[in-house]
Length: 640
Ligand SMILES: Cc1cc2nc3c(=O)[nH]c(=O)nc-3n(C[C@H](O)[C@H](O)[C@H](O)COP(=O)(O)OP(=O)(O)OC[C@H]3O[C@@H](n4cnc5c(N)ncnc54)[C@H](O)[C@@H]3O)c2cc1C
Image (cartoon, rainbow, N blue to C red; front, side, top):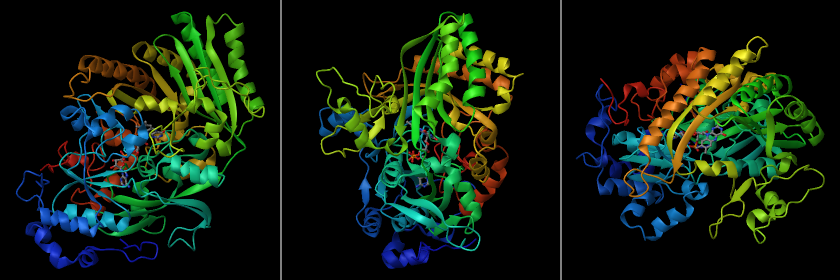
């Protein structure tokens, strides 16, 4: 195992850390038995604030000094709402509960508020609002030496609550958002084996919008972030990571060239193809919060096409029979027209016999987009389909460089910001848009003083502050699109839709992707099922702005359990045709059966070896993460 260097700065081991903060001052706060060995036998139990061994006030003070005053108490606005509903913090929460920027700025909140019968968001006792790898190393050392439960939070978008843990110390990376374009990057130590490539280095707290702004809007390049603009890149990459255009560019994990990471021993390491290659591989899809704390990452960047496009279309079937026909038609239409790297995003199937298309194109102009969809529109209009188009159809192509340009969206849709007497005016822009969107696609952060560039897709608003009822995913192999399998697939999609609505996310399966994207994804530890899947199916539902114990705003447990059961039955219909149960770790069921196999397949044994090597005492434990089998569900007690 090589000890790395932090881009010129020496690696900071425990000894140098002690020196940096003054070992004489630090030593009294370390329980002696832990100094002797962190690996205190099989029944290791993490310390809680009620335990006598919990660090003293003076120990915390020393940590605070060591991290430059960035040890903070963690406010919990939900508790304020419960205990002091008229307080400014509670009022702030009420006003901004559907604003992902507000939520992301609270160290004590997470994008999802919880999941019925699974978890509810809870704050850590204290947080290190880290500025760099040195702060992270100090926090990691403090947690290890004081036997604390550690949590790591970046964008806070974990569905499964893996970035919050009560009674823990939080490492919060929100403020680590430096972004640097690299015209010809070579991973450290790879000078002889790798060519320089264009890349971007991002701090661990960087969210998608900030990266897109720097890389696409300002530099005219592409980086693989998430579809949702407020997802953190560190969590995204470590989960695998898909954006709307992943069918063309591949996974976010596949684009990782190098990570700077603090491991459980407090070392700051460089992980890339030449340094700590096993750790590097594990960080590419092995799940966040498991192998160490990433402090910065360097990601490959790509060229942009001229246009990205979007298609919004709803087709309504008049009866169950016509819905069956519509689904059958859509399956063959997808295989013929869309099963390639030009098309990503989603098709939604619902219990009320509607097919809603919300898809994105890469590298097509508006003529090509229209031509692609014409056969399906003709089928709906001309055949005895029993189907009709509902509402307004939108087909738009947008200069790729402006796709994530918040100010461009503001300028071109002024009504998004300033409704004119409730009567918005839509304009055709330079003949680029054939139809304009009937609803603004983007929402802006309207808090006083907020950055004018804080924007998010309207479609993601419904996921902020949500308490999940149920959520499941499954990769669908491309063989289901073969001529002799299409009917079987269409029947299963129809049957699934009788239980619960779901969406096929075509951009979250790499079947139909170019060889370069596939080659990069093969070098990650994501379940190999992703390589051949034409789509990831997702079904989920929940309730916004509720929390257990909050009078008048309690989760509806009866509806929740019913929905969870229906979601499970819907996905079961599709499991029956895939004959497998492979799911995407970052977007999957909290109660996933046989999660190691579902998330990582044949890669799991190697991942467990790497976990043992870098984190033998389970400092980094998350729900259903690698190695979590050996720990109690709350991550406090190692099982005998
Ligand atoms: C509304 C919404 C939309 C989403 N859209 C997409 C999408 O389009 N594509 C997609 O692929 N996924 C999507 N996801 C899933 C998302 O990619 C994962 O939840 C991802 O892990 C979130 O990363 P984060 O930093 O925002 O979250 P966090 O909750 O902060 O972190 C997620 C996990 O990574 C760990 N982690 C965070 N930072 C670090 C770090 N620096 N070092 C080590 N571990 C760290 C955390 O401990 C946690 O276990 C979405 C999720 C939500 C809620």
